[in-house]
Length: 260
Image (cartoon, rainbow, N blue to C red; front, side, top):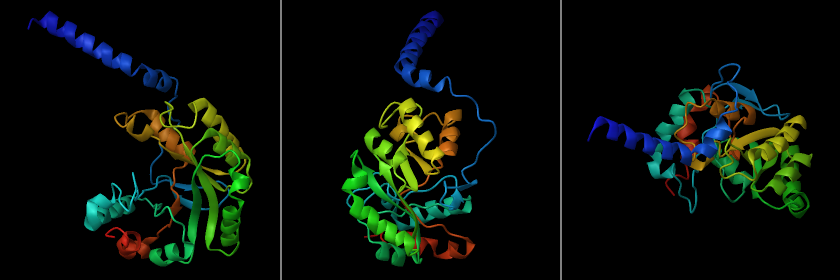
């Protein structure tokens, strides 16, 4: 192949690839650089909850269904190494949530007398604050008794998100957000405006789908990644924070159900 033919074909292929990703590029272009460097192991305070933990959390139930997830597929040893590697690099926020809530069992399995955060998961209804009021009352009572420190919800519709922003009951909200609108409840500008309202009301705003469920997985060096994590203060549905005295028992406490 002649050099000019090679360059011509290569340029055509590159143009096609750029065109296919033009939507992503247009959304990323106006995002400014960060004013300073942020790290996953930075200590942050979650809204008005007074809960302090690492900026980044580590989950245990990615694509979780039927007691199986990407993490359980690693096996007890593999997942233990993954979790401990996160711990040794400064992470103190670990997801240990299940679909069925049993606060007494959760505390027993984790070896703790309280849980930091418990969320109502996957809310889509605009009227969820009245429809699920009995559930909210149970969590409010648990908070009063010191069984949990904060409660809230994860939202999967813009209507549910707006209701969460206005509800004084919500301490923590888990929202889908990324710069390109992938797997989100609405366009980024619409979602971010609701999240700003939440933040102004003192709620801890938590980001999920930061990489658009893989849509942006190859853009690790882009400045928006850290920016989203910084502003959303990523956490998960239920967590237990560990100090140095807990490290030796981390494997047992977090992985008791991995093999079942």
